[in-house]
Image (cartoon, rainbow, N blue to C red; front, side, top):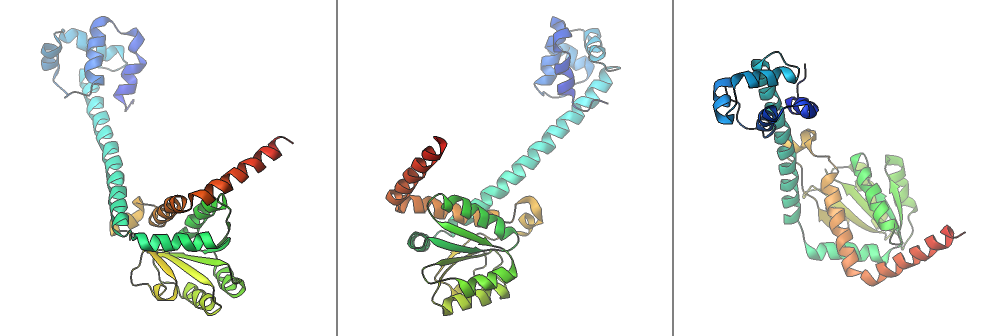
Length: 268
């Protein structure tokens, strides 16, 4: 059975008479379903014409047309509901992210990035996806970003990072004993550490130089409607936008250098 009456009607468009086009336009406009008697009066066409239209598009009668029409209308409403629900969740998340914005902390975060060329980004699980986004953005601005996403490597990075290098820790939950230990080791070696977390009570916060607080996911969002890395990505986008604003001259020079190198290799 054809469960999308709109596609069905459109597929017969070129075969319809002028009267049948009027009937088709009514349904394609997604107006209220009517009985054949009422539709006949509204469109000023005969009931026989409506029946012929139903059969012209491959259906047995008008009742089958109305059944499919109602089915397709409900489908459209369900799809709109899904879209509106997800959009509302993202809007709510963006609003909560905005309420966490502290310009002074974002500027400090940007300053540390600007002052360090080599950055170790620590993030496990979905946090590692955010790390790769950070790597993509800031590598284009002249930073060497290492994404470290497993427990052993996180511990090792704290042990072997050198002075003059920067560590960014990312944990939405903010409860990670292995990362806490790594941060403490890094700080004991005088390595600067930044943090992005959604947990305002995270034990990691008191160990780092600057913290950006991401929005936490509600129970509904945590069920999977929102990808868990989105709150972190929002913070990173804020940092990126602010960084470009604060260090526009530096960014411009690097991008110009990149363009020169790209053209040089392209011409070989």
